[in-house]
Image 1 (cartoon, chains in turn purple, brown):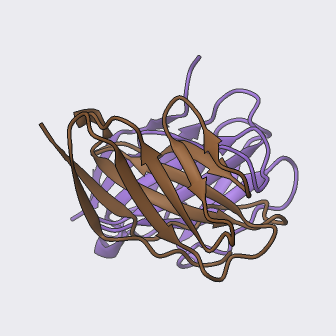
Image 2: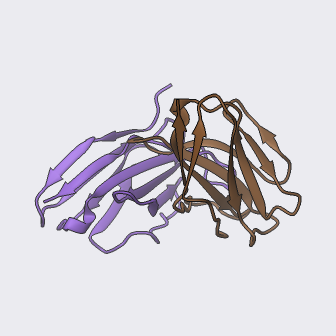
Length: 115
Length: 111
């Protein structure tokens, strides 16, 4: 079946501009996660959504970052007034439910370059 | 979630078994041990997870020490496609959230 998809696959923007990254999770998955991976580094957690519960925003690095999710479907990650340090691959993952044994399925990521 | 320690890199020859170690000396009784891997230019993918007993699936085996302070991911017959960064991650029994990724082990497979 279809996996997690993300768009765009690549995004180049100028410093100070806003960007929106999209994630389409696997149908039926109630949990959705956003991570960031800087070049040569491990993944950093940003935010996760579980059903209708309030999202866990504890990983967002600044108030320039925000995310929304419509029901149990698509999610958008917005970065306002982008900075060069925001350059990274942004990865989205989804799982059936959020639990200690869930399997997270990752999308291919969006590579963001801030000039 | 408790911390894990893995070697930065390992090398293997194609078609030979690979044993990837992970130390987690501060693991608690309800922590699950998860392994993910990330192939070049791709998102991570799930490999295997376990609690106390050894686990096998089509991708790999997970051997868990009796005291649970360490575990080993076993690839029975490495292929070139197995070249990736392998992450060992602990998830507590009450955890309902994100995975915490360390630096992982970069596995190189030589033909």
